[in-house]
Length: 478
Image (tube, rainbow, N blue to C red):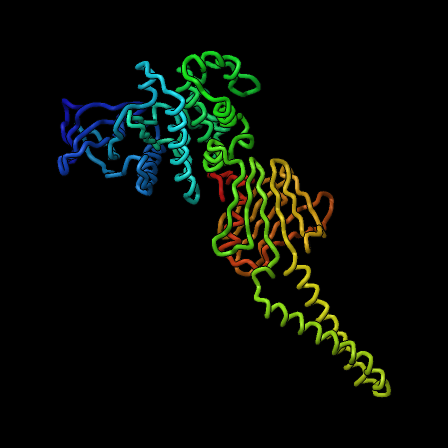
């Protein structure tokens, strides 16, 4: 290409090739407008097998345009031009200084334990950033070739061509699967991806850096890479790695997504030894979430803790006054028995007053004074209601029985679920459980008095914990 066209758009001067694959190449170039080096990814229309490739190339550009992170090369330009009579599309990014991790290993460099931990931390921080988007961005092709490292210790993530719905022909002979063999999570062979998918790619990348051996060359036992026994001695001879780091790495390489860390934030917390993480909604001190390992516990304290004391006393006094009036009226209404119409009217009024006051008192104790605890483990959702620390009800929902999740304003998914999360201004925040072989649908409602922002926050946290995917877009929603 250098012999055909030195400049693109009369602005970018091509220097050399950084990489190539499929129907495209990536070039190192100079932006003559500002004299800065850039990377230009060029897609040649003649080499495309179908229009899907162009659509995905355009999608990559749109996704990169959203990103603003120091470890992701900045998006600069996207344009169509002609080279030697052939139509090409060009994506321009700031160039990432340094060399790929694969290049460092191939040159014989050995990463020490401190560098490995630092690399893991930086990559997790990038993934945490990507997972904050709604829906979250999943890279899907995390590998040493797509991670640029410089000796100063900084690392950069490149090549978002596999993000979300990018498809490539692979060793399966034409299946629509994303990723690179050896670094792909098992669920990617089924065309699926969740937040934990990129964590598997991180695990295989770290294994390659620690051992100098391709992850595909390790023995597999029950779908899991067996690196402990096969390379235990070699790992310690090559670089001394702490047992805790090996255990953490082993957790990243679990073949079943549910057995891995559910998100980059949890993986980073575990790497730093923070097994228990507590978070509170900033505007509601009565609501807290506690995570310990793979278990999440939501506690909504009694609403009266934040209700004004005079207001509580007011409603209690009103209910007691109504109850007293009703009882007194019921006792004195006997004197009106000689006037049937008036007697019936007074009796009806007293019954309404008594039932209303009782309902107010019951509502106060059953809702305002109750504490809700929702504990989510790998197998179950345990819903407990307490009044004054005394459990008055408990419901256990098995995650395997879940058929659908309904969460208006966030997502509407049809899956295996008996849980329904409803968030709107008209409906309560609900957790429903379908019981087998019955038409009765028990309803577990909590957070009745929380505002909509907190209800959405809780729905996001629960959906992330349970990890539901939209089957059409293969994205996790939270």
